[in-house]
Length: 409
Ligand SMILES: [Zn+2]
Image 1 (cartoon, helix red, strand yellow):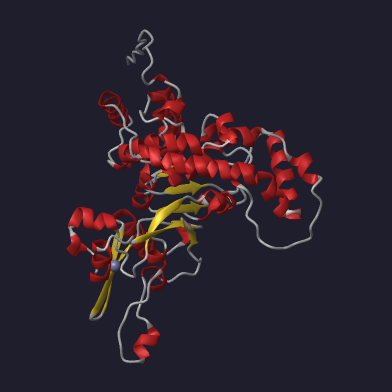
Image 2: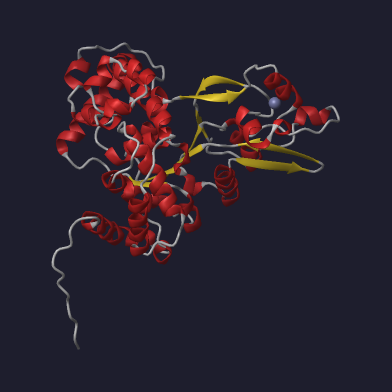
């Protein structure tokens, strides 16, 4: 069966010529990563404008794992967040901001309380506010279609900025009410926290709890308010500037070790693209515009397909054995691994997860998870990485004749 046969008729119709030429989202990304653009871009000239146009995602050279992790987060918000670990200047923040052109649309509640039709489907008409209940009864929509936004947590954010605090203007009028915090604004959006290892524990805990539960409650004296916070958390950290508490590390779904580009030709290409973007950001954005649009449509289709994506039981069982074999206790390991594999298969226009999908997303789902390693995780990261790659290479392949080393003393 070809990939096209898995698409619904609407999806097939919406495929543009560009998309048909490229088999999957992943191929589109790889194609651009390798292509040399800089010479053509130089001819665009210098516009001398200082406005902030984000660097296009497709223009990022190399960094395949970081790009893949970010895309999987757009396709499946249930992967449990993404942590980018690497030194300064490796393009972590640039990559996150470059997602702007690829943000899909979601159904967003039009009501202050965030009522959704799915609340009624699961909890009955009582589970929404009276106004929405009436609208629902009249067959009117409770949501509008809106693009996912990228919300950045300011570096100096205080706890009350994050969860919300007393509305001072209302307090001045002798009323007590709670002002929405950054978390509530991040509902159904991406929340980016740069330098997450430098943020106060209290704030990190509040964000991780809310992100895990998708909902949180603020209590301030006699008043309380409950908000939705179904968000994709993206954190970045520079390990040279301080470790992240192990229990926090475990709560991120995907962890990407971001290194500088090692290949000289790639570095040169990256330099040229950045220079072109500095000189003429609009021109560069224009060069990538139609293919960014195609990638966005692919993400949107992948999100649709995700509902049907599944892992056959036998394969899932084998995968869990590998997690056990890696001596990983955290149940978040397979949860993230399976959710990202489903997203990966969906991005490749398939519904059934195959072993290769699991293999592709295993390192970012499984690394830095073992409790015994948590204390000195950066020292041990290299060893763990090698062991993981080795086990993945052998996983599901025919075992060579076993050679047992005998140690006798
Ligand atoms: Zn409502």
